[in-house]
Image (tube, rainbow, N blue to C red; front, top):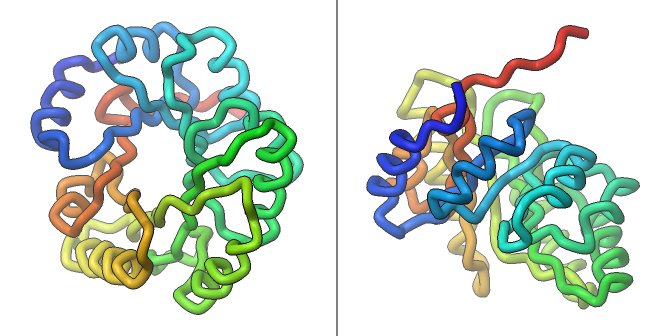
Length: 216
């Protein structure tokens, strides 16, 4: 499936300007992104540094690029010149590296701290104590701005569990002043996330169809 503009317009109607839609475009061709861009979409999320760098060169400069994957410190330098928002910061060491590369590019880069709210052990993220520590340490960094929090709920059909995890993240978000972004909710759970206070959602498969990864 190529770009699903019908689904895109339906989601925008549901959001009703209450949340930013980040179109998760990893593994998808530039032509699909261009089609959404031509329909008015400006926020796109990528998981892989090289793919993001390649697409940034080919697509309009008005795009706001979000890095939503697990970012390795040695890759920060490649996206620091242009990235709009880094979603998944889960350590002070990574934040320091972003700060260093942002300074080299004369920028202040917006970041979201990733909080571990799901029951699966595979998810990255900080717990409440670690979040507090990173927030205190980050006060010394001049070229990063912590704009808010992000989190991923359990991959589960138990909507009560998913709602509980989003509620916990929203509660944590409210404990800090100065935050403006609460990024939670994806294709399968964004309606619950919105009900629980999300103001940024990350949608991939509903817009672009399922991803086909090359066989290894």
